[in-house]
Length: 216
Image (cartoon, rainbow, N blue to C red; front, side, top):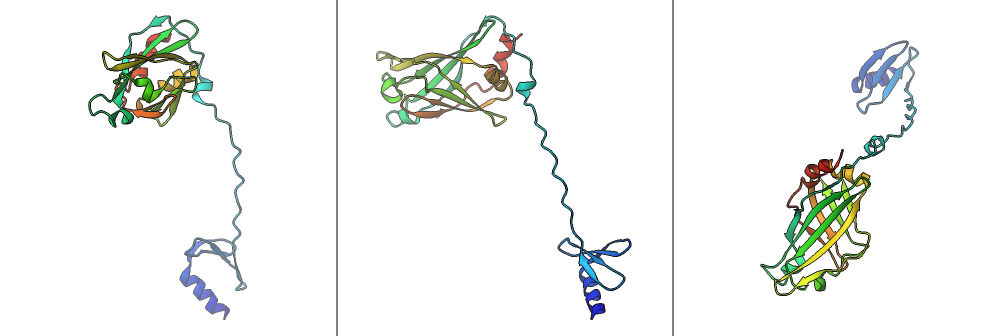
């Protein structure tokens, strides 16, 4: 009976190594130990001790403090796209665009934003830019950078010209400055006081091109 069992094991297993006893590997990956006296058993698998987790410092932690030049760059259109809300009322006057302007001194970087909404009653649809408003920028490396406004800004409507202007500004932190240089802008969204909308990106490499101009 033992011989038959041994033959069956040999038929369904492959020889692994030969040491003081014979080791055979079964089709499901387990190892069988065969002893000279005809007995056998499964080899115990020892679990490896887990490697201790080593804290990894981020690029930001390893970077040196940012040094700034005093500069005021020209405004450039970065965001420009169709507003789904405005499109419900007009097939032509439904564009929202935003110009960015970087202004720096030796202590901080200000990002001035000028939103232009192609509707003379922009407040009715979008409300204000408030302390809760923010621009979310998704980068090509998958990171999302949130640019938060820190105070309220009222719009200025131009009924005779058919558009509304929102002028506002925010301060860029060192973490945001570093992050914005690591990838192109692929998506953008704006959180107004009355709604959140996503817009197309017109100038995806804006920060990659412009931030080095204000950095020492």
